[in-house]
Image: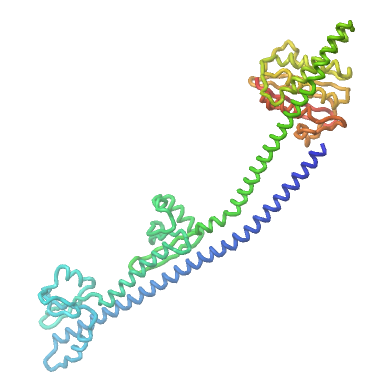
Length: 500
């Protein structure tokens, strides 16, 4: 019994040590993970700030272009006014100032036409001399802005068509490229942040990055993801030139999510490893115990065989010498009992052969044998009677051993004075055998321990009876044996459950 107490203490000590090691490992790992998580969060914040700054830069650049566009419009208006003055000037009017205004326009392409669209003059256009009329593709090219109408003499009108200057067009291309690169940098971000750019409604995706394409085809998933992203980080609102208002939704990177759950996964891996290790060691220990059990049983059967053969011969010799028949009959019973015990030991470790037997009769016969060798102060009660037939697959000699062990333990627990009740009941699929005594009882904490090898409360004994009984019931009969109930100083009830 002491060995199991020490074993229990060692288990508790090792379990506590394992908990301390795991806790320390998780604690240190959690510190590292938190530091990495902070760095990752800092990278995400830097990325978000960079997006804000880049958006501000794009908007600032766009404002400059808008101002430049306005200035070019004013310059064209001045050129148109100069043109009108020249056309309506009298002979005495000095036209040098207006001519200088027109001459200073070296960047803005301008085409002057009459009311019929005939080209009167042009500047900064590189038009072929054969082109006489503003029409077709040329007209569409110069219709980006409404023409400036100039009234001159006799209510006649001329039209000044113009388009962006070459310099402005180049700068506009730079702006468009800047906007495109802005979206590319947002989508292909260095922080590996899953990002979705939407339109002004914040619901329809415009572009995305670090998200599988097949996921974006699922509208429900996209809606849920946008909601999740907005709960994690406030969407970035941007108002870009030509493209209007957009919202940038983003969430923690995949690495940050991994770091978040890493300690939990680590704990799970350690727990699984420890569980597998425990199961493997338990299996190895049980296998070793099985080998020891089988070896001891076979050796015991072998050792009993030789003196048993001699005893059989001595019994025959006593018969020839005319010894009292009653004495010889009792000696023969004990010799037969030794043969049964030898047979029992020889069957340990071998495949048990089960036969359909009336279990009521078996229990009555086994108890009758024990009753004759037990104190008359011990009363055995068995229900039902042996005539009541309950057929169960049994190995006769091994199962008798179980009943003997339970009855002997009951007698020992009652110290040779008390009542042993054996009740057999059956239902549709199972047989229940309850063996009760009026002995000293078993503490509840030892209900399972008593079946361990070597556990005993007696001063003399190996503590193997209940262990053998459990192995016979569990392994050979596919049944169960356990302590059904027990009260200290009042008694104990063991239950055996067998399949019918």
